[in-house]
Image 1: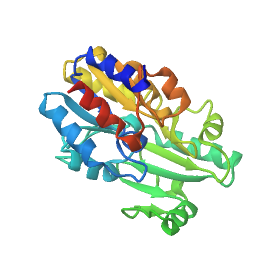
Image 2 (image 1 turned 90 degrees about the horizontal axis):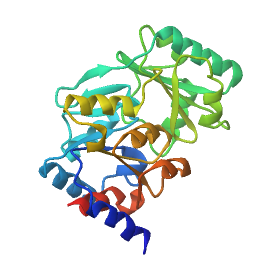
Image 3 (image 1 turned 45 degrees about the horizontal axis):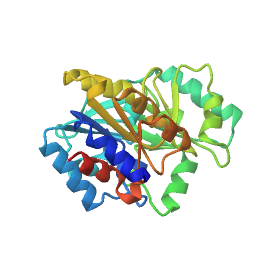
Image 4 (image 1 turned 90 degrees about the vertical axis):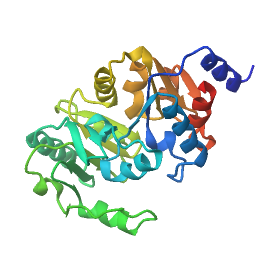
Length: 277
């Protein structure tokens, strides 16, 4: 029996979940950061069938919005890896899980002392900011920023209130290595790619936000399915009644998932949704 027939067979005896959470990059989006027509159609069919679908991404609202609008999922989305639950229709955060600016300064100082070449970015309720070095790298790159930052320079100079998310890049050190340097700092470290460390409030992740969404809808974990591919998806895949890892996902994510779908470039999410339908 092929792996495809195994997961299709498993879904044939499983009811369509009442809530489905979809990661974007590496999961719903293809490698060139687009939504295939097949994926759009599959999501629309599932929502017409009565299932609530929410995007659950590490992205900020400004870069998640185009996909939410294309998929007609504008009422509710989890962004910043669970750092906020957002309503695109009203352009407002329904809730935020920020952490104190003093903790942000501690994290930045710790990494700058250990890795002088580290580059930093920050997402806050009052704007987003990025180091000059990182800004120049992105500006010269193949995919420049879609919108200009609210501040470019030493990120810590722009921080005046609580912080939603910090991001760190380094020329050689991996996200996992950078995370180890923040042991003892009151933050949660994760990553969606090996070279990008993402730092949010302690005890916050995609699962925490997804559980809140489910509770607000009167649903339990067993009625939820979650799709993801990377370290920042682990908690929600483990919590959901059905955790689906993408075929292109990291080995650790595929190991903990209930189901491994075809890759993002094979319309893996769409294939699973179609199997339910």
